[in-house]
Image 1 (tube, rainbow, N blue to C red):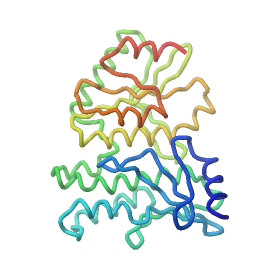
Image 2 (image 1 turned 135 degrees about the vertical axis):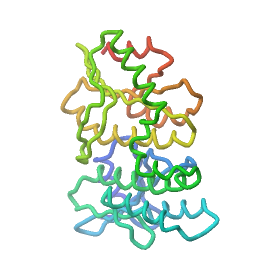
Image 3 (image 1 turned 180 degrees about the vertical axis):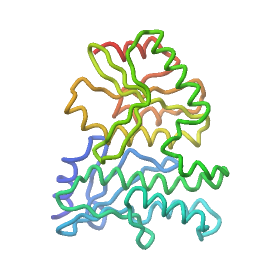
Image 4 (image 1 turned 45 degrees about the vertical axis):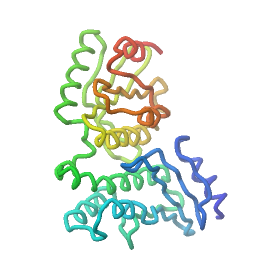
Length: 274
């Protein structure tokens, strides 16, 4: 299978937010909506190996991490965190590359998302050391559970109750990858069902982890829209702190409807009208 045929095959399984093109040397390059901490785009490369496909980052994640440090050697703690990311997501670390093998008839969309998640989490290892927040390295998928986020979550819950809007909080839902995602609020009305993701961050450094988490969740849960046509995804930004930029809103806007906590009337219309 040549690069063009490979791209056509991959594109049929990926959401439109992912862009596939022939790679410079061989295979295909998938440009994902996920970002490195400095805003660079995460690319995943797919190589045809006959009876399976090899997905790789060609060493870009570890290369990015190396460029952020004066020392070219990673500390034992960094290596431990990187290996933990690979174990959690089922990724191989081979000769400095993050790789994943997929059967020829395997779920390519799930594999691309999983490897891209690994790239982002490996690059986030830098933050754990720069900001001396080592415990957060194992909690990045729960970045919304800071004290600030919990307070905002409670405010949203009180508002939903005051408006007599039916909802469930903290609903667990299995994605296409079989990973369980926590939906902050599952809101039900006569016209629609909404999965509401609350995006709240108290610093610019936390923003990329929060947005990446929501993008990954929307991609993994998108298959549910085929089973429930009235289902929609809503990204509710807690904009009471000035940490968000246009690119953060754009990142999730292609996968979900955007709402702002500072505009509750608009949020109510989104949740209660078709």
